Image 1 (cartoon, rainbow, N blue to C red):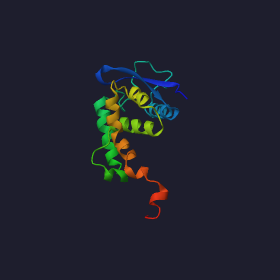
Image 2 (tube, rainbow, N blue to C red; image 1 turned 30 degrees about the horizontal axis):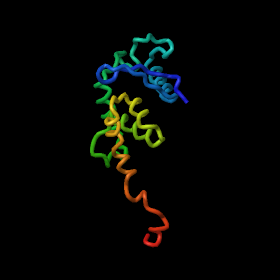
Image 3 (tube, rainbow, N blue to C red; image 1 turned 90 degrees about the vertical axis):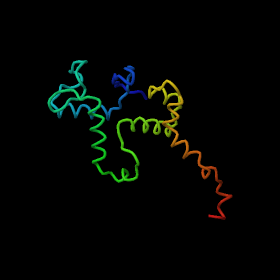
Length: 149
């Protein structure tokens, strides 16, 4: 099933791409805009910011990145105690790659979705999950180890 909502964004190197959005994401954007007193998406000018501060100015990418990282850290979610690094926006790209892989999405489709020009970059994103999947225990046969464990 394809999305009927797409967001035009500028990525690294001012590379233009379209990001598909699920209905839940669109509804969150609608609620945010409503809470800020902004025009609904279908009435807003195409060049207007998607999100604004409470003073009506567009957020800068660096501010949003820092703010997101700070809010996640302040959430004190239990799993954060087991992480050696902070969670920021780039973490979500890695999560997207991993979740896509676990859902059986082809490596090259993940690569294209992330906007990578080389498959090696995507493989870096997936290395931790590949390492877990390659663990020897996954090759054990119950009939062989059954009497020992």
